[in-house]
Amino acid sequence: MITKEGLNALLNLTVEVNAPTFIIYVNNKSERLKYVCEFIFNTVLKVNYNLTDTISEFESSTSLKINYSEKNIDSVFKIKPHSLLFETNITEQKPIPFFKHELIYFYENIIGDLNFDIFSSVFYLISRVEEWQSFQADEHQRFEANNSILTKYNFNSKPVVEIWIETLKIEIQKKYPSIIFPKKQFKVISTIDVDNLFAFKNKGFIRTIGAISKDVVKLNFKNLTSRINVLMGKQPDPFDIYESISEFCLQKNIPLIYFFLFKTGTKYDRTVNPTSTSFTKIFKTVLNKHAIIGLHPSYNSSVNQNILQEETLNFSKSITKKVTISRQHYLRFNIKTTPNELLKNGIIADFTMGFASQIGFRAGTSQPFYYYDFSVEKKSELLFVPFCAMDGAYFVYNKSTPNEALDTLMKMATEVKKVNGLFISVFHERTFYNELYNGFGDVYKTLHLNNYK
Image 1 (cartoon, rainbow, N blue to C red):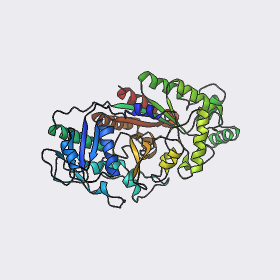
Image 2 (image 1 turned 90 degrees about the vertical axis):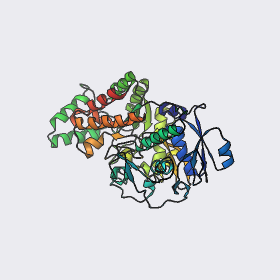
Image 3 (image 1 turned 180 degrees about the vertical axis):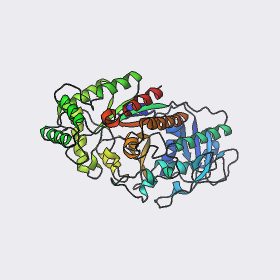
Image 4 (image 1 turned 135 degrees about the vertical axis):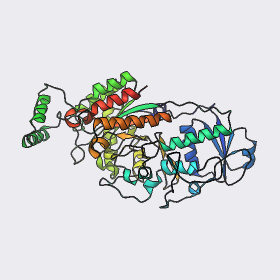
């Protein structure tokens, strides 16, 4: 639904040809080093770079110079390398953290212009090495926050990768005062996962009768009254927020992405039947408001490639265009297999990179980064777009009040502003229904009103 060019514009992934250029001297131009340099220099710093293992080319170059080797080169910015970027396997060894200026760092050294190997540190987090290493999966077979090294040391709510890179930028400017780095801007992107298209409408006769019976048995007459009024057309369905939220984001110029679950009939997939005309009507509504549409692949799609193929095909037919972006339902994602299955089915960007149980940066960054496939030791074409907070972390896992949620969200937005990053949130259609989550719809609007500029 969105092209690669459109995605690059949305996420500000382009680098100007006339931006400053760095030349980096290394002993070995490994795939791991190329991958992390592309992220640090192109994605975050918005500058160009070249790697060379030829000392004569390095010394004769007029570009800004960085020495990432054991060799001593006078008057050149130096970073002492760790072995991580030149290995070709994955061990169970995790980096030993050290702490300075109230921040966590990895791969400490005392030689050079930085006291840590920033290339290896960034690589460890954005390549998701820790998800390839052994970990204790949760009940949904997910890598959750308790497995994260950043969460362990309570740094998950800071974009530590971008703070490290900001430190690199400052130290480079000390060495090369004439450099002017391109400016970046803080940006808010709203995403909504649609697990249930409607609360009461279009659920079919059998499901509706079952739901009415359950209301009666539980003596939940308030819910029963709302259900009947919706079915009789006396009031709108409480999950039907598509017109109002799309208009809100359109007026405030906030990019908005909906991820629609397009499967029903299982324990974890309970939306309206995908063949219903309700979907096409909602798609038309949100597209008319300039929202973007993506797929929310169902619970078992991450372990069954046939399911994912069927859903991407059916969803593309329904929206009459090839679906290109997705976020896994329940954030069910296997780092070793799911990315390649998504690529096979035409997905160019995945928005699953975050936690269900806690807020924070799963990879330590608010910026998009490409999937690194350790099975072939190479960067793939699948872009990971991380989010920093999901509504369910507050009212499902941590039982937070709306005020508590808003307070932590605003603090995190402040952290992202400091590095001019992307603040991407995840809400759900049901979150705006006060009968279920009173006050959280207001959290959404207050958060975005205060941060969209």
